[in-house]
Length: 355
View 1 (cartoon, rainbow, N blue to C red):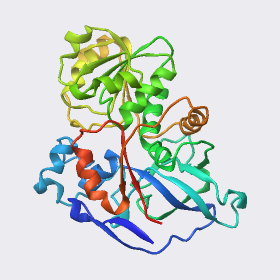
View 2 (view 1 turned 135 degrees about the vertical axis):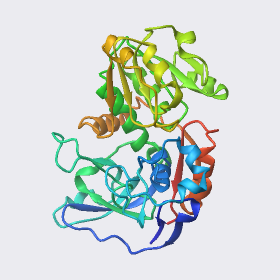
View 3 (view 1 turned 90 degrees about the vertical axis):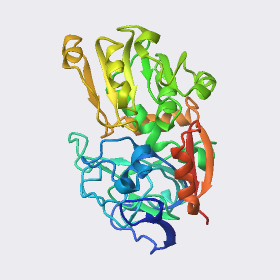
């Protein structure tokens, strides 16, 4: 089969489109024909080694600095060293084409989504592994996964639309779930034009929250049409725009220089949830703001058990909608990632393998 093999830390030259053996299923596993696979920051970050403690800049900065991105980083993976060479790809809409002898044979032919964040020790443990980061993922014609992580979905959405969902919507749903957002609360969402941010806008509105979205100046209308109650242009002073203690929850996948002001606009007892830091991982924290306002900071990597079943339900009930900006052939991944980093799009890019 054809696959994109990531050979090590570095630039686009580390992405090789080549023939690899078809995966063989073991006990408890399913073989999927990959129909569509979304593009996410995490695949770029993993290739660049951005998760390494030696990196202090945002994704775009390290991507443009060959001196940093080409250096091998033993701690550049999520929690363990990245298993180069391997196949990345966190999102997967697929069709079941094979199952192990101990897996339900009736699944063959079903169209499914894969839960990419897996909890191998059960949901009582925070240990997690991710498809496409810790083991081979969906940037291929076929992928094998544990049957427990495959969810049949009944929907009229296209393969591409379904393929845009898992990582972004799962991360957004997990942050909102962990932050315990309820109807009537005011939620501030950073990076609201990206995959996670645009998902968070919809999922917060689904909970009955008031949503203020931070976006680039050319994307305000799109985020308002998606359901946000207000849009603030990125770079504006949040305190001037919102005032002190104006929001109940901050959902942030950006980090960087706006971190301190995000805490300042939180009400006493407010919650700040983060699952990324594409704007920069090193931030300034005034502990007085944190403890005097009784704030709760919530790190969100391991997905809680209800998260993915919730998403399947939302899709099947048409309570959310996909936001697909553009599709690319799988072999054109380098072009897709380069355009992705320009951040001119709204929503998700999706790769489609040839079959």
